[in-house]
Length: 212
Image 1: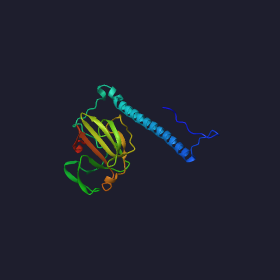
Image 2: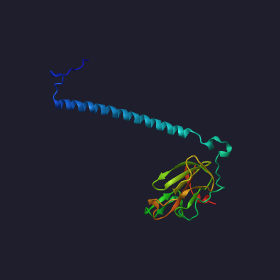
Image 3: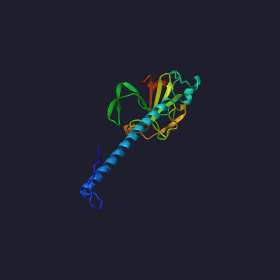
Image 4: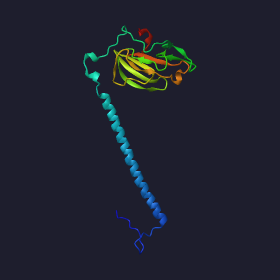
């Protein structure tokens, strides 16, 4: 394709009107901006792919506990029981057979955990030996810790602050894992408490019968 030549005047300058020249300059600049934006988008997509790969690699890396032998294998026997994570009264009972009243929400709901009253700032201890599999923040139960107890059992502690454990940690029974936080807006009437949920093979069970 032959290159288009532009008419010139005797002094060597283009004979294109100034308005047309400005339009051409803007078009060229826009093309350059579009090309840069496309490059940045491509870089971002590559970066996201790399992050996903790093996350998958992190998930596949065994922990120190996984590398140990039988002594690191977790076992939970219901007869051994659980220790109370805090000393206090159960202010909301486990109830999956019938709905119970939530004062803050002013409605009846099923409840797959227990709420144990406690003073804000009180230490919260592990109810059993376990390994931290997840920590995070939830709008309803606030900052939480999930632990694998072994043999299909899993415990979730909620309404916490100032966590002292992180994902991958092996925790001893009675070890402090955090402190009682101010209640979330879902528990403003019930008051400060520790949310405790026990599951067996993915199904919630009433933890009160396990407390010793």
